[in-house]
Image (cartoon, rainbow, N blue to C red; front, top):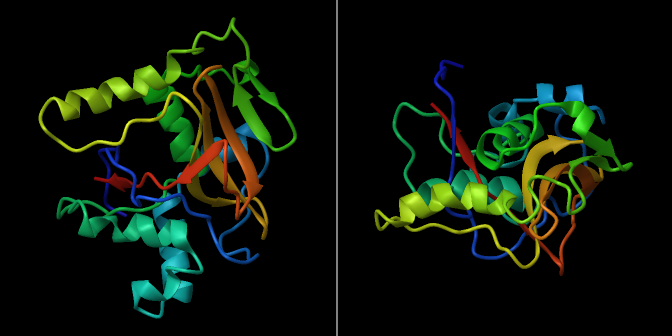
Amino acid sequence: LGWTHGYAMALRNASSNCCVWSSYDILVNTSTPHTPSGMMANREGYSETRKIYDSYASSNIENIKSTFPAAYYAIKFKDIVSPPLASSGWFLPSIGQLYDASVNLVGMSKDVSTMTDNGNGWFFGYNSSNPLAGVGEANIDKYLSNAAALNVSVDYFTTSTIDIVWASSQYNESQCYLWQIEATSGTFCLYHLVRDLSGAPRRCFVRPVIAF
């Protein structure tokens, strides 16, 4: 689509409160396979987010606020932080783009043999021998600290609960992909779970990205 340099993740969450992916079961986007290669290959966050908007917003973003809140807050983030003119604008990252964030921002290994399938997706690390235990979130938060030092508003990833970032990608009509970060164990999961997942100990939120 003309953006060839890369992606940038927002420094802040797109909404002040947690939200669900959608309010009802529906398969909007092509199902992404439950395999490491299938998930990693999906870098269609922009197209998947636009499909939600084009199919259900009727040219008015407010029409999807209650039905597709994750996509709504991702797109509306432009009202909080204006994207560069030559960029894509803000969108929900796909599960493959969140895999890239795990590797490039967190330090997760690219070697899929280090990942384990638990039935709902794949995770890296789960015990004290995990090289990211206790430091995975610190790795990504150091980038946020650099921005905060310049008096830029940021939302750090928490160190006391389970953070979930919604992806644009779907597994089926009732399950969507997400990026699950467990601070204490350093576990980083590429999962598909129910579209209305919410509640303690998890925080389900939107961290949009842009292509440029």
